[in-house]
Length: 111
Image (tube, rainbow, N blue to C red):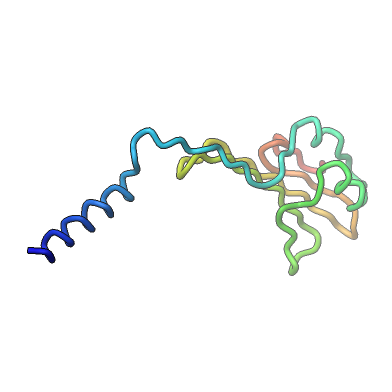
């Protein structure tokens, strides 16, 4: 009898974890770099990496195998729900800006 009651209790508790408790407040979590269209408009072809870092900040992802590409990603979520997600990629050649593409850039080729 005790084993059956224990199994029933554990089953009920695990079901609450999968569904979630009603009325529990979940905060919005922001992760990554916030890049605005105004920031992207300041970028011009021929800028150095240092100038781009000054305008956009330190990239969230710097690929150690490809030093000519920086990725700026941003995600806002509430629990498991993704509220918004943005991606911006900056491409360099010989440490000079040549391309900006992504959500905030309106896919501008050649910056």
